[in-house]
Length: 148
Image (cartoon, rainbow, N blue to C red; front, side, top):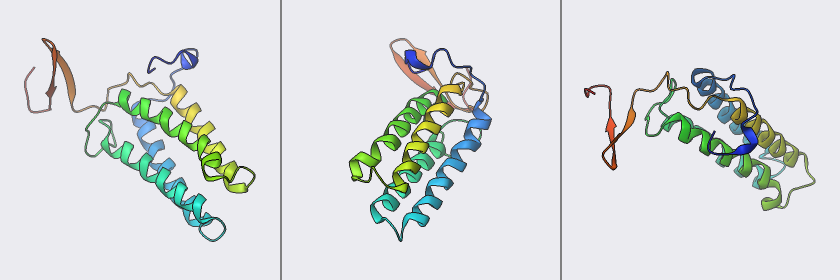
């Protein structure tokens, strides 16, 4: 996936439909963590809310079963998932909260997102309603109402 050699050996057991549901649970988990962290660590709380918003935006804009705006493919979504995983793991150092319980949450989020991304089949377009077709040297967007 995404040209990363590190995940080529992982089995692709999560399809786009399952992954889309996982994304909304992941976003909700971050929003809940943001609320829980609010009294103890405002920086961690804000980061959890921002991370949740990013995950939610990615889910809403992906062309898969539970996507709403369907602006980009599930494969692009996968590339962004790796960015979310890296961001999650980097947040404790960026916020200077490495030795706190909130840091453990972000490390676990990064690891979990990496595993989910690694075992998701980003080539599964079964829930896609839009497609990009190569026409000449340009891409042309084909929606559900346009003929092939």
